[in-house]
Image (tube, rainbow, N blue to C red; front, side, top):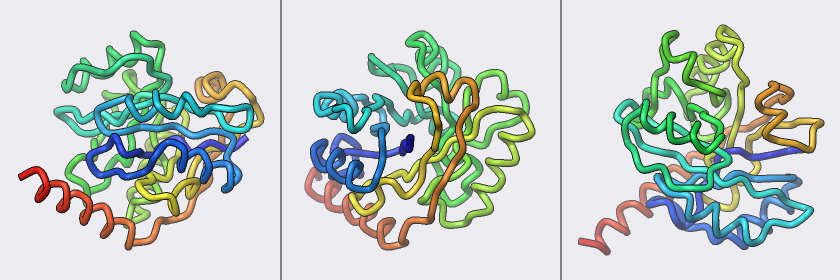
Length: 213
């Protein structure tokens, strides 16, 4: 079973993908499931959930901006209202969700969170491979952190465009994704995204800024 645990739809400020396109591309690329983790909202996940089939499981999530950096919550049912690191984690836990730190240590992103040893007790997982990390040393550092603290290591494409869906993710033999993650019965796979996708994302942000202002 293959899952991409980090993707964005049109409900992200820098996303354009429609739910139907995400579903179609995910199945085409051999995925059994996909997490929609839009920036600061679960709207994309809720919409995509309508198109869930036996072929493709949809996980509702969100990539939340906090005062320390981004945090992903998976298996959500309600919007996260806080922007405080500890408050966000508390809200995710209250929904029986899973806390993941995406693209940690990535110094090229102002939104990257740099977890410390003291943060271990708050984290369920750490993203050990993000396809949009330009320097793979940051992915390697995340993997080292996960191994050191014996927490599950996940992966995701961080897709903003269709050509990125399925570039990274996790593989498990279990049909219960939540249990597989909690029990750390997963392994990661991934390949780096094209730099052109970063250029495309910046173009979308600029276009929307001009359009709104």
